[in-house]
Length: 260
Length: 363
Image (cartoon, rainbow over all chains, first blue to last red):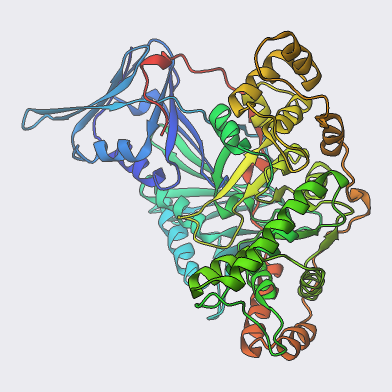
């Protein structure tokens, strides 16, 4: 059987809330090494790769690897039935047709039990090649979310340029232009507020802001975010989780004459 | 038009081959569009409220130009790069079909003239619609001024659209005609219009997945299409889609089916006059544009030329032409959105360890 118990439902609830707008149905792959998910959004622009390690749970047990095909909207609906402070348990047998969710309010000795029907999802999986990124920036996740939200007011797309020691987020629209320059910064009291920049080669890429803003919803999951870029390849945007990570691969906008 | 009931055969037997697509999935892609069919649609659909044709200052129809101008700009705004393919000379085998259509048009003209009510007159006048040589030439002129590539097919547009897909010049063919698949287009987009996506979404049909689902190879698929009934020969009495698919799966080719049916006592026979060999040849080796020689480059739109043609000659509003020219120019300069599937390779995964029978179906 598979069983995973978390001290607080909040973490899992927030993860699902952060990704549910981008995917409709998805497989959760549960094994000894944790719960993993890979999902391509329906326009094939963003790939979500999630790993929740066993250490992130109070109890974790998985006798046989199971794949749980879930409709995200249904899962979100059921998760909303539990409170953030509740203990949450996910449970299913080795050949499941449903996934059980239990929310336990220890203080008031209340238990609510739900189950969600599973489905068979014929899903596309992509193999992600090793990429040498030429620019990497780690910064407060709320800041990145704000910059991009602001620039969305101006334009559909943002250009991210990394050169020497700064990263510039810029947008140009009918109303006007805007650019945010981000530089290295160390906050010794609040390390999470620091900005660390590492650029080996200058790079400049364009991204759609609608999708980018969907990605940065994950700011609720982690205080910092790491954005990695290389010329002509998708960006990697990673949020660290207590045990594991959520990583987005994001296809850029690239012009070329011989596009088919 | 096209292949009778082919869409249903594919969606029933190979549901994975058919999906609705959203604009981002095809943005930045070139799509070969059957221009002759688009013109026909515009002539039928772009009308005044009372159903009369729209016309310019010289009294000439402008429905086809209005449709072409606005739809092309809408597509490009969504990031899709349309390449228009115009019909050349129809193959001889299609003459019967064309004669039939001509006759229908003549009948409709008579009925339209004799109609008692305006509604009836409109109904029949729409059936008289036919894209003329002038319509085609004007549309080509407009597209060239817009900087949009135009391809002149030696024969039918669908087969050249398919050839451009096969030759890797474009991502997909945009046509309502299912026979574009029979001509070997790997990806066919239907309902590629700028209309309401919620009501009428773009439908993509993938040939490879269709063949997989039908358990046929391409040659067998072509034979199936011929049996279903195409533009080039009359269908056989008693040969419905179910029967045709079953027979092709069992016997693999029309020759073998013919032999088999002759040994049977049933009524269903393939007549000796059935021209399937010629029709098959037409589908498999049609007369198409030479892919190596076509240049599908988008040029800077010519504002002065557009104003001269659309405003001075055809009576369009100058403001609207200028506004739309600006939209077109801006959209053409936009960098197209890439997809992750352009960078990352798909991996086949083993089927999950499940008991499918107990599970709900995917919505």
